[in-house]
Length: 209
Image (spheres, rainbow, N blue to C red):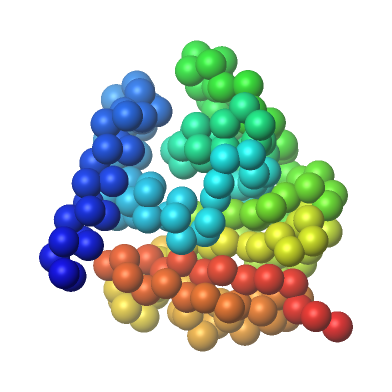
């Protein structure tokens, strides 16, 4: 029974990759990096765990050149929206060109600051970041500014390398430290998915007063 369930999950991932293989960047320098990260953080696994569905609105902090942004856009469809944020204008310019080339009209690009992603207020079903949290200069301040962007019942989803499990403290965060910082920012972590080899998926919601 267990083997059958795992086989079904793997088949779903393969199907998604085949169906949307065009979403992988066609720039050879970027393509190899995206494929490596997508292997480490399977797209379908992330989408299912964070609960992203057709028609939703998601805001990605640290979208960069759009590795996972375009997959989110394909998932939410024409009735949904992806807000792609970064503080690096060059990366966002690349993403904008990518959106035009690949025909995405449901991605809106937002240039933020180190402590405020400047995403629209009361709009997001999910605020999301991956491979970003350990880079933040002001993590508590930035995450606190995400509170006002969420709809009622909106959540924050963060994919972050587990520093203790991997021994990579330069490109990751300790789980205990992450949860404490979320608390300081006004969020409570209600799920930690540890099934990926290097990364955890954290789901958090605004703390109740």
